[in-house]
Amino acid sequence: MFGEIKNIHGERLDYTFHEGAKGSRNIVVLGHGVTGNKDRPFIVALGEGLASAGIPALRFSFSGNGASEGKFTDSTISKEVEDLGAVLDVLAGRTVCYVGHSMGGAVGVLRASKDKRIHLLVSLAGMVHTQAFAQREFGDVTPDEGFMWDEPDCPLSQAYMDDLTQINTVVDLAPKITVPWLLVHGDEDDVVPIEHSHDIFAKANDQTQLITLQSASHVFSEESTPVMVERVIVWVETQLALHP
Image (cartoon, rainbow, N blue to C red; front, side, top):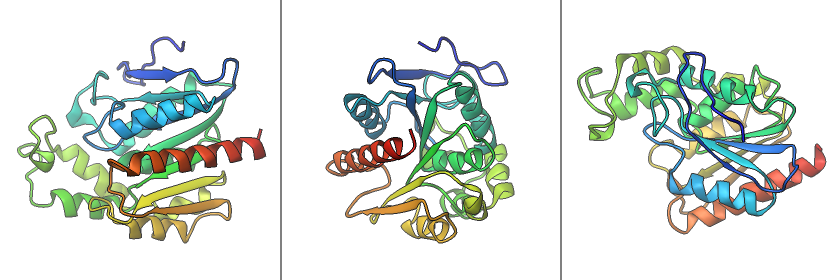
């Protein structure tokens, strides 16, 4: 429907579109986390659930991930913010809700803090303190030699570590998010502590809601998936009704 989507480097971004209600000018864009892609089970479930509720959805893989063009070692938060901008470029005239998981959540905060084309924002287990994350998860790995979580397909680059260190945290951008915002976090997340969502929620606008999902992991696995999907859909439907 949207043809080929390329980022500013000319790299094609792989995406899947869920049509939803025909003629709708609303759309939810789904972005994944580090080492992920658009086909993570809970992201697919959310895209399908939104479409079943009549809300069009587009899930895409950031450059260097999944079937998108580009090198994984070039994948940084800053580059993914640019990728999201390229997706927004093809959605002109639509009411856009961006849903970002984990590192994709940090991407959403950075983009929404400066780009008014995002009308609603959802952070799923969103990364907040980027430098702390880099050191906690990969501090004992040698960049450009080792791998993220010992996954050979996910080499750890110095560019990635430098970018997370330079950003440091997105918590202070919370006041710049002026649109309705939903934070969803599981209380058994062992990758991004739920306290990070508490930190950014404390500085967010009064249109922000924080939902804690009991016994949910970082990727909302198993029985947590339908619960997350339902909560997000209900929130999106409510906000679209309030802000047509």
